[in-house]
Length: 65
Image (cartoon, rainbow, N blue to C red; front, top):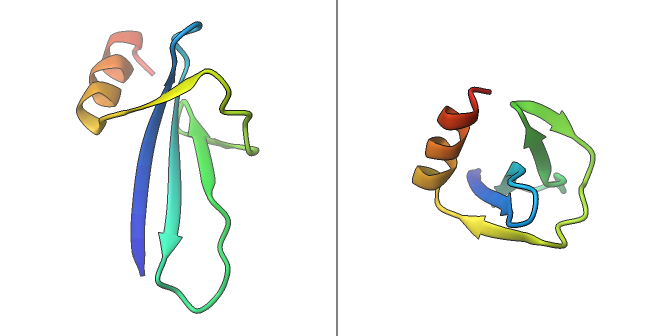
């Protein structure tokens, strides 16, 4: 099982999201999305841009989640 994290930022609102995907497993597992360290339903990613973990952590620290 391999866990892949992706980080997104909305360029208009400054909102940040994190997605978690499990791969190389024998069963289907959906992609999980998190905002403020709480799981949310699948969002519409229109306007979101993928960012690095370093940038995600920096933004998260600044807004004090």
